[in-house]
Image (cartoon, rainbow, N blue to C red):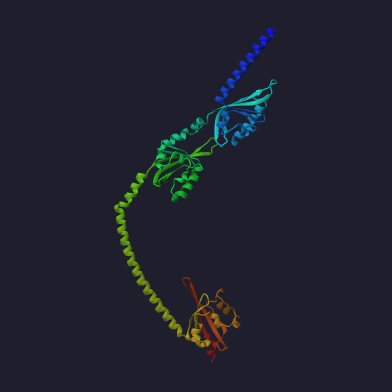
Length: 424
């Protein structure tokens, strides 16, 4: 019994030693590696502190009982689901680069292993996940070539998201813009641009966000509201899925040159010469306007004389003559017309021509068209109609209508011959 007790004690001591070594090993793993354990269906049953920290979670309650799918990017799920099915069925372990998604939606790049932990009968009990964070190294690898090309062009460097949000910038940009680095991290590219240039920049930025590079000059506004001019190149950077992940802003400060150019332009002799020529042109223009005014007044007088001459000629005509505008308002009514209708012109001028044609006479096509402003007139055709004078007597006449168009004004003149007079 003593011997058995001694062997049992030795066995217990060995077990305690092995347990202590296992705990020490586990602690070492937890301090070094990202570690998690999953059920075969992907349910997370354990995650160490490093796992929580790297994936952006506060405590285990946020992840335990959740499926591994919540840590996998949508674009990776197709191939990862096949891998997981193989592992759950006891397949070969996985080792290689892998990207996970943090709680904040960021990418976590790792060198990962997924290993099956088996029961005594060889079936899979659970799946162990171990990983090392390689996110920064992966970013450097993807950005290396674009960074070098951009830095070779200029000394001002800023990285923006496709949305325009500022990600990173160098010290030169911080110093020039007069903001603190903390303040800049809250800004977008559109916060630095003068309002008058915003629409143009938005169009340019949309093109760059679609994959097109751009070069040109942009005017910036500093924290102290000063103007800065940068000669800028905007270069889109693509990620492994060929999506635009960010836009590299490389610029050169051209403010001094721009201000000097503006000042020189103000002081140049050419401007003085142009001003003198402008003054000379103004004097010539005033003289020309004066001559044009004199000529126009002369033409107006000639037109008035011609108009008066025509009116006097028409006034002396034996036939009655009436002129109406396009709305049917009487503009001219000669002496013969007064005699024909037995009415004075003062009663007719400025009134609608319908006053001379009682409604009872709206029976022939010519008269209807003549009286209705909305109907095309019958022009150039001699027509015989019957008029009614102010005494109610019917008068047979022959009437012919002419049309005159001057600019946008249309007038119609009716020449009316009293047939009853001709018959006697």
